[in-house]
Image (cartoon, rainbow, N blue to C red; front, top):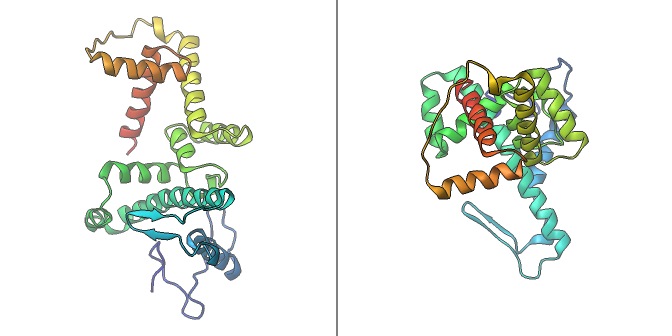
Length: 235
């Protein structure tokens, strides 16, 4: 039987010894701990006998203590975060190993193509050796378009300051706007004017988003489009 990444397991233990990106060796016990951690994320134990996990929902028991409810939310969030990385790594592997059959594998997941492509893009831009367990997949997605050194610097800052992914996004946008102003791009002879007519409701929504990042609507639009372009060109 093969592991999730396609490599064969050892026959004697059912666990495959592997090496991380830094070249150090994993022991059998370390691999076993990884598998146990994965199982524990979905194992709610005997204390939650009235909790039922289904494909299309989660049934919670009545009068659930707050601490238990909070722990449950943390576990579900952890599973969601891990699954994004798992799908991304699986997609990168499949794209490199199976060529045309990769499209069929994507179809079997029943997930949106753009969503899966984003997972793969982030996983490819940030190999496992440079990911931070204390930060979410969303944190890493925010910096994926940057050079490696800048990725590491921003992730370290977000980790040290306990930033949410939204806070990291706002900081990145503010830094981009500041850099543009410092370099004089806004008054450059190479700039072009672009006029777009949009409904007032959409403009108001953009303005609200811009206010949350402490920048103008124009700066917010430019930063958002730059990020979207980087994701599109690097996939």
